[in-house]
Amino acid sequence: MTVSSQVVASQCDLVKGEKIYTKCAACHSLAPDKSLMGPSLHGVFDRKAGALKGFKFSQAMANSNIQWTESDLDEFLLKPAQKVPGTTMPFSGLRNPKSRAAVLCYIKNKTNSE
Image 1 (cartoon, rainbow, N blue to C red):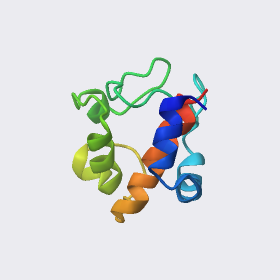
Image 2 (image 1 turned 45 degrees about the vertical axis):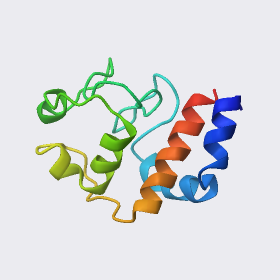
Image 3 (image 1 turned 30 degrees about the vertical axis):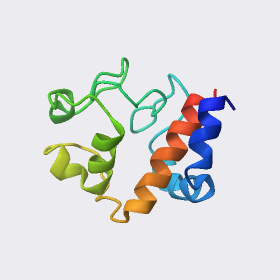
C-alpha cells in the first residue's frame, strides 16, 4: 500500500466498502484490462466515461461527456439512470451516502495500490 492509499484507507471504512463492492463484483473487475459484463473499474477515477478501450459501452454512456470524478461517480451510484439516461447498467442505485463513499473509497484504494 502506498502512502497516499494509506491516507485514503484511514479515512474510509474499507471493510464496509469491500462488502458493498460484492454487489459490483458480479459485473465489474478491479483488475486492469479485465472487463466482465461491465467495464473494469481499474483506473475509473478521472477516466472519460465510455472510453475504456475494448469495452462496448451504451451510446448514452459513450456520449455522456463525463470525466469520472469522485462526485460524478457518487451521483452515478445514487441513480445511474438519472445521471446517464439510457445507460445499460442494470443497477437501480445505492441510496445510502455512507455506503457510496465506502465503496468508492474501496475501489480507489484497491486500484491505486497495485
